[in-house]
Image (cartoon, rainbow, N blue to C red; front, side):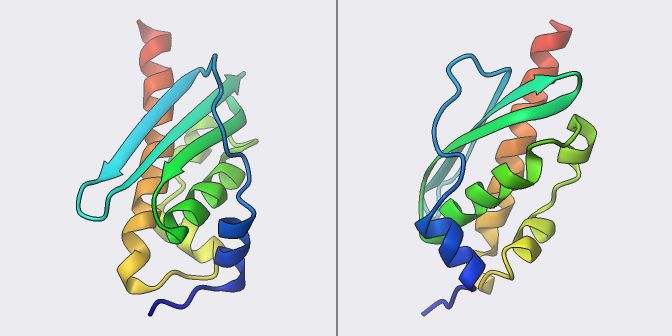
Length: 125
């Protein structure tokens, strides 16, 4: 059985920033067919800074905790700073994840990065 840190349990039981942003500046969706986790991130951007992040996650407790943590880590960051959020930094901020759940932290950073790329593509179109 996997054991989770208090911080993981807190973000799982009390996830921050759950929901959608209907007029999001960027959206990113990633999934892992092996475990069935699916994450969608929505971002609002003003003057190159992420002003709001919401997410919807279908997955295990670790996936929900990771989504919550990524959303907190990204708000207030420039797009460049947010692109530097890594699976390792997410796991570290959560006080660690069991080895069999590390793939969840990959999904969180990937979904955020996909939302940023979506925003950049919309802007350059």
